[in-house]
Length: 294
Image 1 (cartoon, rainbow, N blue to C red):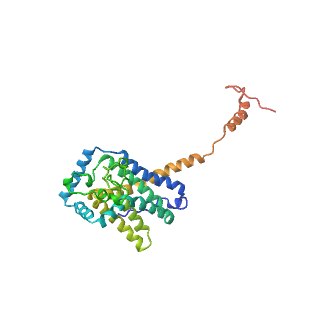
Image 2 (image 1 turned 90 degrees about the vertical axis):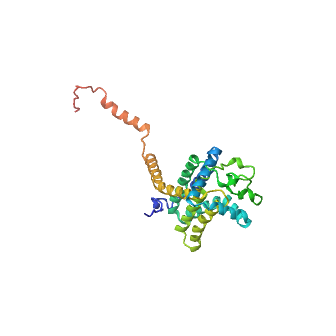
Image 3 (image 1 turned 135 degrees about the vertical axis):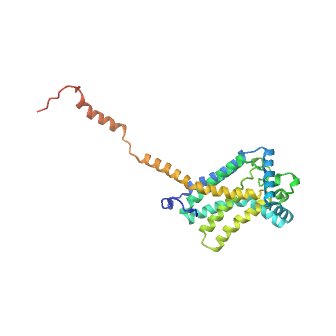
């Protein structure tokens, strides 16, 4: 089954997009992501247990590339430093750039795409709430992971607390590894670039960006492979929920528009009507005959 991502009622919104209404919506996406990670702080020991359980499951399934990737990224500075910059900043740049590109070049697809991103982010925040998870870099040293963000911290603005600027580690939740919205958002960008790009270069970016992000989040020991897969699932769920969400928004908008467009008679009009009718009714009681006037 093929899922279309063309915006519902596209003709109604193709020319009605305004930057002063869209910018706050984009800010909401990032605000929810940041605030959700900050406010939803799971118990540290519980988060570590979840991380170890994920790692054990991957070992059983023989799908645990993150340890090998991390050893490569931590051994070679030429890989580790760019990967840290990629992890710390690129999702904050690429995602809004793709949104702006869609808004300017593909306005009929923008509304669905923007809502898809927002709904998926909300679904991801639910995952952070229900399953606080320690990333590989925060597991005990015996698991063999190296925190490349701390290893190469002298090259960037971050300190020992993930990608948070030095001194602001307390402003982030480091136990929000499951699902990986880094991977989820990059997949969203990739789909948008592949579907709506007109050149081979843009489509190639649509393939390379999510693949590169998946390698980076595992190589820097910030996510497990199952985190990345969960990020893909979250985007799928968000895509399925987007069309119903847009229908609800359209229904509410139409109801508000209909109510505001309904003309209301002023109170003075009702008063005039009452005065016009009242004299004809005065003195007429049940059973009283009314003589005709000559």
